[in-house]
Image (cartoon, rainbow, N blue to C red):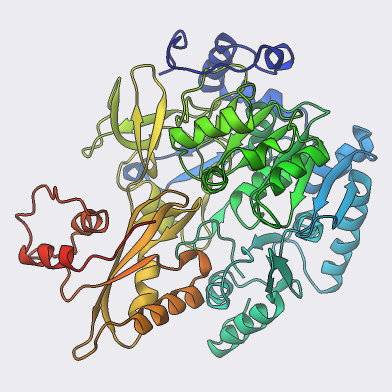
Length: 615
């Protein structure tokens, strides 16, 4: 699976200076440790676990699992019998045992330049203890679920850690979600408490968060349901359940090795904590390592397009982690806004959320990193808890756009439609053959959905839902979602949920949503709608439909294009042929085999009525 030697051609290598201090400084060392993590996971992860506090030790084997639905219930068990507190490990252990109390935990940078705050580990611990007592005074106890709907402020981290300190389960809902989406997550999870804020500015726009929270709670009362949901993606609410021991070990280890964390680093992940990236690589991974991080409330283009590089210089950021969407956005403005600032402190650059196209990779590497900073292009999911395919800064030569090789403990495979493993260079379904400590355990309250979504299609494998290509050198390349999800600006959107929002409109009889490439967002939403008899499609109706989706789901799900479709292309059995719709959305006339269409004349009519998609 891992080649004996890395390729020498068509690759980029990390700096020699980085190799001198790196935790894993060569490809040979990476391969040695990788094989150990696969062949003897108990020893590999057991050694890492020794660095953390355990109230009780685990009994039996480190990892136990069943990935085969034909052999019984799917389960993953990690460190059964062990008990600990993740808040103690990321705060108390750092303050009292590692003597890091005076070290900065977060440099908070507000939306407006000059609005800033510095919080040390000792101060963070004090604030978490105080808020934990507030939660207890409100009757929150171990096992209760608490929802957090907040902007990117230090209080969000405090609220998270206060929950886990007293044994409550936190569910963080992205502050960009609408009241309707918030209500759905309330209904699905039934939390006992909601933590929110009055409001915040995002760029020059005021977001009245309390108003949205009140509206969501009223919707819940109207539906006679009580409070909240853990959810990672923007699809239909799906509570991805992670457990403390495995998740803590995995986020801590991936953070340390993927970013080659060193004690004097200043790390900045630009994600929002409302997404899994913020959970794993703003809160738990960095704090478990005693790292200093930047926490940013604003936008990369406000008040100008140099804001990110200004912050890099201001705090001397050494490790920088952002989304390809942000990189493509900033590319449009050229190199001058970047080169206004020195960026001499940068050592490692990272990408997250979606595959990065080679052009954006080259710009990131050449302009931002000045050809001296390795890029860790990380592939992972809410469900995986942390990185599963990724380069390591000083150990694995880089190919622009490739997720490179598996992280320790992860065994990927590529399957064909029949479920057969493909060897050598090939393309198919990306799956994993065995668990790692950070993988999800179930879907909260719906284990059947967990088994059906991730294990039923190919028994014996965890199915990612992504397509993947392996090249002649053994490098993995993510080709995109195979299921009904779209990746818009690094966030997964359910086509079914957007379609549902559209057909709720009184004049829409049927809807189908597909993705088409977008130079900045990765994918854009192209919607086909069939109207009820007698209704004429108009610009006003288009605006109304976009508004409806925005209110039902959130601004991120706003359709880019809406086309009237008097009839949708369907098979004789009535199934919509989305492959055909994707071709129409992309204006690609090579349709392939459409002999199963009930009425092939529909295709030409839809082509004639295509939206103008010039960007």
